[in-house]
Image (cartoon, rainbow, N blue to C red; front, side):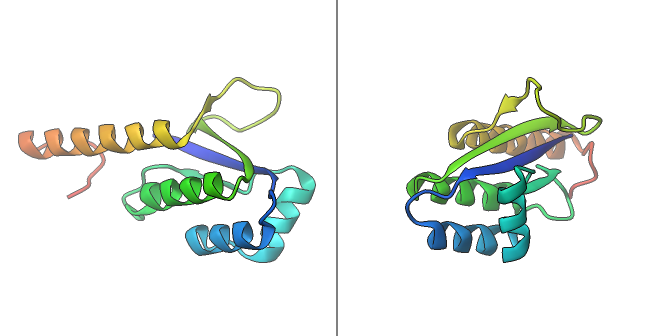
Length: 124
């Protein structure tokens, strides 16, 4: 499994709407958002696909769509479970299109596993 690490670099011209979108989609408090931005630390680091929160990938996709529309300067990276994010580093950048492809690939994989009756991660 892999994780996503999300940084906000610039809130853009609609800071209030951007913060509102982050709070709505991620459930993160205002103080943590501001602290993360001020310190240049990740706003979020968590598993992309998690059976305890199967809606998270689509929530993240909705957030990325909204951040793009609001012209927010952000960057999201995929890191492996055994990795700890540190700069400088070479990580796979997650964009709206790439996350869409990851979600579609995951859905196909789960469907194939259902068809053969062997779910690797225990999802129903």
